Length: 124
Image 1 (cartoon, rainbow, N blue to C red):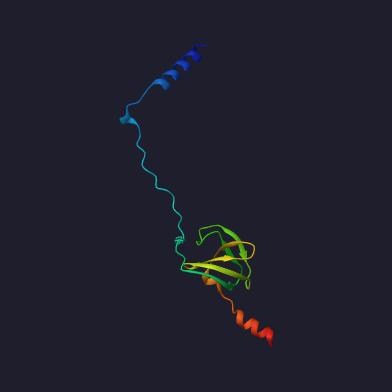
Image 2: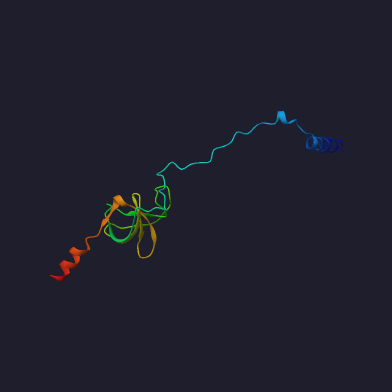
């Protein structure tokens, strides 16, 4: 019982004891984490707004991303040869409509469709 009283007394003293401010450790400001990735272009100023037929030219599948950066999540992927609609060009990225999703693809992996040659070959 004496031990319990001693422990409770020490606990009470520990809770009520205050330290001078000069003995408290100082905390350095921690910088916010940053993404080491491609910078995200300014979406307020697309370099080209259009409705362009694009075809996927990537050797495998092409990632459809939620934004114009490799640091942003992949929402889907597109097979080589798939036709999509380019809605706006933002830097090196295209905002596209796949028919079921909207997302961004890098312009290095798509090219404009040659719509006229297919239409002419069907007429012959």
